[in-house]
Image (cartoon, rainbow, N blue to C red; front, side, top):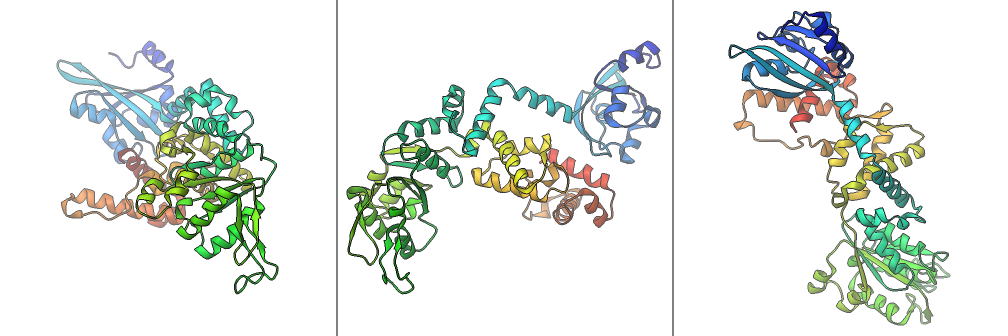
Length: 456
């Protein structure tokens, strides 16, 4: 192969992907124009130079060509350049007399690959799903359940289809699911889709206050019922929700004495305020929610069986966010737009950051997702949220100390570098300021962080 042949160079320059060719000693022979465009490096800077010199000088983070020469087989690596760009390099050996005479590397911009991946994701059915899910969490539910796509493919669509079925009747609904999955959203939806939509929707978190305060909030109290009580008394949430809906969140934490009083309200539609003598009648639909296994709490004597069966007429289980991963991307975009508007920002997620967040398990569910997006919008120093700005739990960076006794010296040093760079990034937020504080170049910080992202 004559790499100096003009026709050969013209063919290589016609390719969209970058091409990098070395000889059997690792000396750069030729790069095409696409490689120059992708990397910002010029042919004159590279031709004639050895690959190990380019790696040592920090021009590139690692060389696929050198690994091919060492192993004698095709290799693909992620390569970071000094300008922070990430490339996918696939290097292939060409043999002559059973020895590697040339190494030809095909180079593609990973940002370009990610963009292509997301464009593929934007097929019609996913666009509809994202739009529907965004409307759902924005509270615009009118046309949501008319889409068969949501009902067939989205886990939350099935939940809201079931909620729609029970909305027209006053039947008791028990919403079950982990903390932060959106139980209050489903309760609000049932109310909005019911004949009571124009009446009050009132929510009470049964695990958020002491027993005596919950009782006063729920049932109200008569004048002078206890020390510090208002002179005129106070109407309870049951009375305020008359003809509407009362949402009792975390019902599993309701104290046993109050469970008895609540059962009476459900059975007789009337109650007595704290310190009062008068029976008050109410017409209230009760929707309850819990992250507990109420059946187990009944077995443990912590929840009344009769109340459980009264509340559990229609149970609706809301899956955790990790079980409906197709909704993570639209939820991220929805809350990003919401907090951009709230804080008057124009922040966007980089494709790499979006991919990491979609792959994250979100143990705190939608509540955690909202909090993370709000934090990123407020703290992002520029217009794009980059990978390095994501929380450590999403990056899966090590947060606890490890036993160094079984590590090599190189691993011990790398762990120390990780901790120092991570601490500097937490304090200074940008690679430029972190590099300045640590006394190294910005390219060094970027290269090390990119390498750790690939290995984690």
